[in-house]
Image 1 (spheres, rainbow, N blue to C red):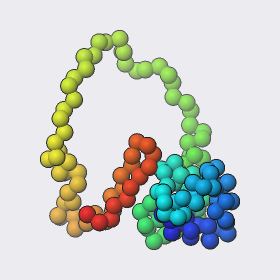
Image 2: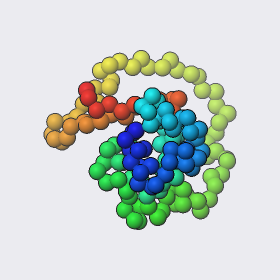
Image 3: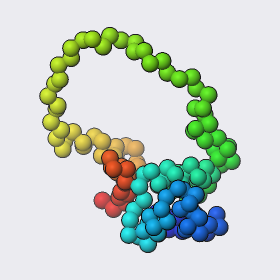
Image 4: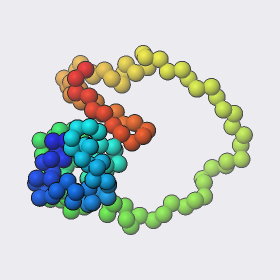
Length: 145
């Protein structure tokens, strides 16, 4: 991510301070990321994508070769698509007065994850990267496993 931020600074003609101001973060926070001391949070990644709608999220997160989006994708953001959607009615379509007894959670075992993490042999595809998103809005990317 450090290299991608450096590329973004150079490509957009920004300084680290001006990028921090644009993203509404502390310059020291950006400095820590650029020095390799810290990893960017998920919130920061979202701020970068909102600040630069022409940036390809697949490049930023998944190392896609296309750095910028196509013209059509860059002109329409998801916020624009949902801006004119009518608000959802607060009424619920079902009865909520029932007493529902809590149930004991099912114990999850390692074998339960096997179908998720195994790649079908018939597909001929191999996993190249796994991204883990944490509740504290940070993430890790694994390419060697």
